[in-house]
Structure formats: structure tokens, C-alpha cells
Image (cartoon, rainbow, N blue to C red; front, top):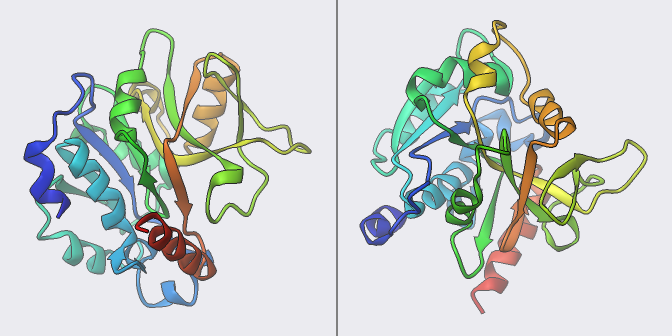
Length: 251
């Protein structure tokens, strides 16, 4: 179990101790499975999507995961109640779905004053030789970065049904895909960001993406290529693809 291995890990000195885990969405693309459960509880290879993500953080040594909830929130809270690694803090959005930017802003008191991890719960990865979260922490440089994203090569990933997200230069700077182009890298849903832009925003509901795109325009959005295989599980059809990739990795 990942929680049992935490004590054996030696996290990077720069490893953020907290993570913002997005679990409040409606999961419409996962219907009909999400008609009766929140998408983060959909099972892949015998484990809920959110547990695939949280186990990666537990293994890396992240101490606290702030999980926002909205759709079928009671089910998520019940599922997470027994988890101790990472420690779970619920950010309740039952009254109003805040989108990712607003969700971060609401959760800032629990995330702390320093940089923190971001994590979507509709994707995870099969690790390569080294922890990707440790690699992110080691690559993080706040003097030149406002955000550092873990990106995956679209051609080597599972469940990618769009034209990519970013181009990346030799120094690791990311630029947004041109509307009519195909980009080689996709955002894995995991990264490290500074809290300052979200603390300064006075809106209640707002998106995360514009902050990332603004950082890219300033040359302060960087990427780190994922070591391993990224599994995007956005639809019921993608579950089988992800499970086949997991089975193949164990051969």
C-alpha cells in the first residue's frame, strides 16, 4: 500500500507539502457512470481515480491534500474519511461550484503560503525510473517560474483525444498551442504553482487556465516532461485503454 511506503521515501527538500486536488466537477463526459457517483470515484484497475492520484502524492511524501467537493460530495467525503496519507482537508463547494481558480482561492488558507501542487483527478500515470513529483520539485525555480507543469508527449499517452496543449522550447518554457495547430505535449493535470495570483483575485468563481496562459505569455510557464506513461481517463471508453496499459506495464 502507498500509505505504508511513505516513511521509506526521502522527499526532495523543495517538495511542496500541500496539494490542491480538484474533485468537484460534474464529470459529464464520464456519463453514465457519473450519473450515480462523482467521477473521481470511478474505478480503474480496481482503484478509484482519486486514489491513484493521492497514492502518488503519498509515496512522494506530500503531507496534506486539499480536496474540493461539490457533485455527490457526501460520497467523496465518505470515501476519503479513512485516509491518513496524505492528510485530507475537504474544501466544501456544495453551495457553489467555483471552477478551478475559485477553488484554489477558497482553499488557500489550507494550502499555506508557499507553492503547492495542483492535481486533476481524471488522469494519473505509470511511473518511470524516478518519482515525477520529486522531479517536479527539483526542477521548480520560483525566480523564473510562476508555474511548472508536468507535461506528457501526446503520442505516447493513453486517452488523448484532442490536439495537444503546449509546445516546449529547449529550456522548458511552454507556449500555448495555436488554435489551428497540433501541439506535441499535453498538460498532465499536475503542476506546481505560486499562491499569489489567486490570493490577489477578488472574484468568487474563475478559471485556472487564464493564469497559466498569462504566465506563458510572460515566459514564466515551464514544463517538465513526464517520465513514464500518462493515462487520461476522461470517458468510460478510456477506462479499458488505461487498464490495458497498466496490465502491459506489469509484464
